[in-house]
Length: 286
Image 1: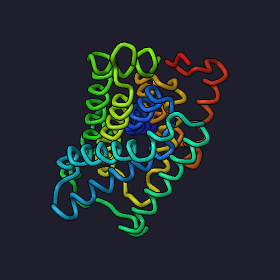
Image 2: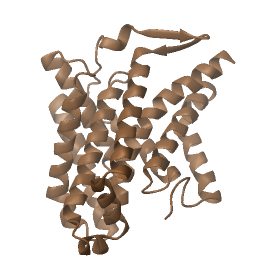
Image 3: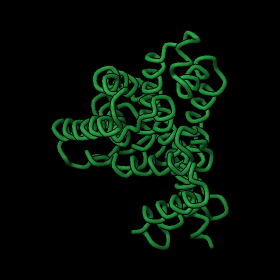
């Protein structure tokens, strides 16, 4: 029983970061109706941004969160302006090819710059913290990662649903032509959606570097879990993606306790079950 409680706790804390990562992906889809298959590699780049801040300037990953967020926002804006905007009106196949090409490019650049050698942050500020409650242990890295992810996810959800600009984002996602008639610049909203997704991946990457090592393929698993969370929560639903991310983290923790090699299989199984019962996802409408 103690092991199960520990697995549930570990999964919940990891799920909070999954939720933040998934929210960025679903936001881009909800506004632009385009899936970014390089999303996981944006997280990987953010993790390397945190690593560079630590290795060159001695900055702890927590201190580097704003730097990683701004860096990934700028990367996302450049990606949108350079290669995404020209294909927004193209076929889904063309969009997939472009984002898969971006995925390959990002991995190649990182491997060229840092080689394929795994890297890890040594002695982060929260590394020595360990809290035990009722026999369940929680590390400082888990606490900070979960808290930071929940705050960032909540802030992003508030911005999208409670501000005028956020409502403009939603309007463009629902009907870009109609939003244009109301004076909303669809192109700017598309760019903003990518920038916000960049911020979310930047924060997620800087938080994850406290718990995980990195290499050029580090983003693959996080990308897959983000896609499952978005599909499970409902494409375009910020709250659905966040809820699904938390759920997937718990599932990964519990399944990892008993069948460590089948965590991804379990996540896919849950998604397929929801797909049968509710095809639009937990909170989706399309």
